[in-house]
Length: 205
Length: 142
Image (tube, rainbow over all chains, first blue to last red; front, top):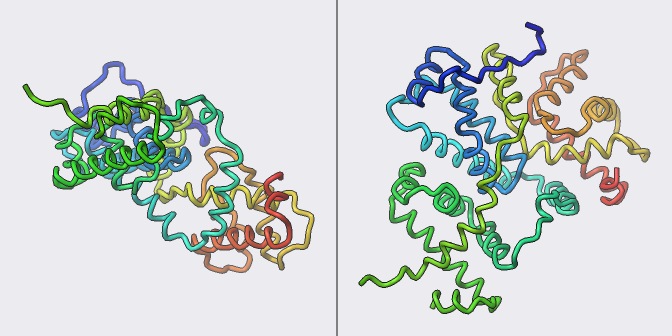
């Protein structure tokens, strides 16, 4: 094989289940990582994207998540579901990303670069959206990362409160309170802007 | 009969607002990049450094340096930055270790130890420096 060639690890002829793939990975069969990547990369990427709101950060988190799956395969219990483990790694990496931005001492450079980024919106951001959904996304965007993670796992990944509590190692009551906070925030923003959706205003009162 | 969930409309809105993300798939080249990372890890060569933030910082600085015709930084910083600018034009998949590698190559003759932070800080300084000589818009257009 050429030195610069990248091996294609994926594509099993049969598709094993997660426990079998984890055992294969633990035994050093790298192609198992490719199958797991095919299976879960979209969920990991969109979760990271929804929390970080940054495509490049989400790409890095996706890569780091599966690299950790490879590096720490020996410590993964094949008998436990892999998906929650991947969500936990993804969310923690997203938190790390947020913390790095917060503590970076070069704020002036970052602010400048953020200005550049907003000057050239990605094509998919130009898609027409209703004002209402844009407002909801604003609510999600302004939440602290720890709250946003709950919203993303609940509304985007359709996980239950108990599942989210297990992934984030939080009491279920904390997950509920973060959901409640986001809903309250949405209600406030709708009220502030006197959004013309009468049935919503009625339901929220 | 139980009363309706007062938050049901909010739940619907949150789900609708996030729904477009469900169609989002991982970038097409993501697997290839991961495979390279795994190869590096297998060989014990590549630390799992992921630096989205640094890339975001460095990309416009490097682009700015590529075509800057104003006064320059003192040598040898100028030479190192120019080398980075010429060899690493902005593209997706650009990785921080490549920058560190360049930095080490540039300093190989002096035998100086090089840490990860040094090129980061220098490029950040270069960004501030570029702005001090020219307008941000001038750099933006490059």
